[in-house]
Length: 297
Picture 1: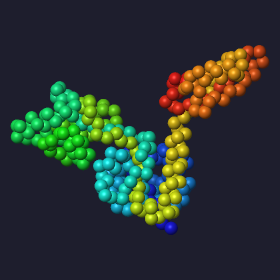
Picture 2 (picture 1 turned 60 degrees about the vertical axis):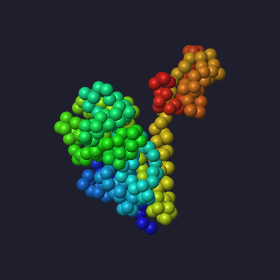
Picture 3 (picture 1 turned 90 degrees about the horizontal axis):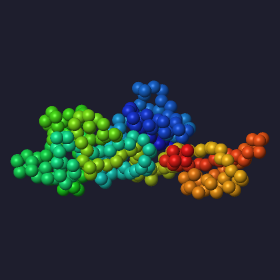
């Protein structure tokens, strides 16, 4: 039996998020030190963890050097081979959220949408030059521009920070990853209202051919996904406990059930509080979605 090769980001926010997620579902990664590029998961024998640069993980999985891996959806969408073997095996791990966006200089007051950008590109063309766009995601950006009728563009490859490209004069606009937009705003750039190319978060990708041809690797992958999904589902809920005064348990039930969010997922658990002073108090427990927590409290 060959072990399941699980590629993880070697550093950065995705590394931290992955380590926290796996530890939270009982699958903590055992790594001798931060300089080691291999590790294991004691609770899941048969899995070899390989630490790779996030930008390489999709290629490694597609080429068969790894069987599955954690990567940002943006990186996967940019790097995957159209006719390759890599597929999404989990489409949302809940961390590493960001968006790939089109951003223009604040001085472009009349450019707020992709339609406006298409007009600007035509104006530039009439003056004998193309609209220059700096981005590390040229494949995704080109496809998005074509979908929105933005023609006559030149893609500028940049290895470092993109935000300075318009000021330095080697690009007119940029397409970059952002989580909050703060860095863009601080550098005099503004996101177009319909300029989001892709919303991204951490996902798990796998080599579909390799998994289909190896039942043991497929079984390990399923076990891994089951534990992750169980943890993610559990993290969506919070148990809330409170005391409510009422004449009877039935009355308290009616009070709670009047509002959907107070009723919880499967209804309340109610028990009498024995105060010793004849006052009627009842302890109510409900399991609620975390999105409803503030309203419930």
